[in-house]
Amino acid sequence: LHRGSDIKACVAQSISRKDWMQIPEAKAAVQKEWDRLLDKKTWRMPEKPEDVEFYDQVIRKPKATGRPIHLGRLFDIGVLKGSELHEGHVNRKYKGRVVFGGNNVQDEYGSAAAFPEAGSGASYASASKLLDAVAMFPGNVGEQSDAPAAYTQAEMYEEDIEGHETPTYVQLPEWQWNEAMKEAHRRTGRKPVCRLLRSLYGHPTAGLFWERKYKQVPVSYTHLTLPTICS
Image (tube, rainbow, N blue to C red):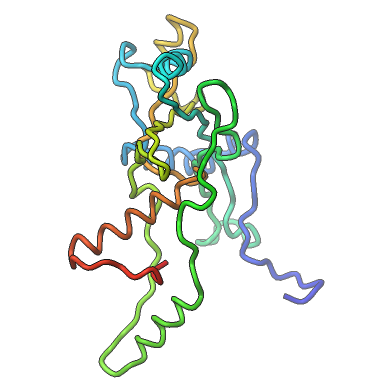
């Protein structure tokens, strides 16, 4: 775009949490994202108060056993897509996203959690160009598609790239606590946490889990090893 242009660059307008919580359509969009992740069983939600795990409980066990854990938070984001369009336009709508706070992950001692520096392979432009070239040959055809909710298709692996068993527990915003969590908190005053079961946007190794997933699926059908050029 030229400097001074009034054309928007297709960037969604950020809305503060305080504001979108007061806008019914925006709050509903964020709740829809929470519900989608719940349906996918992205984390282990307790069914009754006795099933609730607490923050102090999950950090006590690894200190006794020597097997580390990671602790993080989930937070929600609300944006307005098509904010430059007039009210009522079909492409002007609110969208919610729930992400893992990868900037603040701790171990059982409250120290910053350590993750492998390079968990997944980089994407290369040459790989895309090669596929385009192959698709141009007679009798071939090429298509490109985005994977819907890619990261959450992959399960969290307890064993990380370095061979350590490191389960991850997350704190949810209070407005997303279910009745079991609310009742357990009322009884004890303790902070509930949930075991993260699926890879989630924002997690430092989410890309690694997704790479493992997309390599496993084609291999399970073709019994072939994917070349490293895949991205």
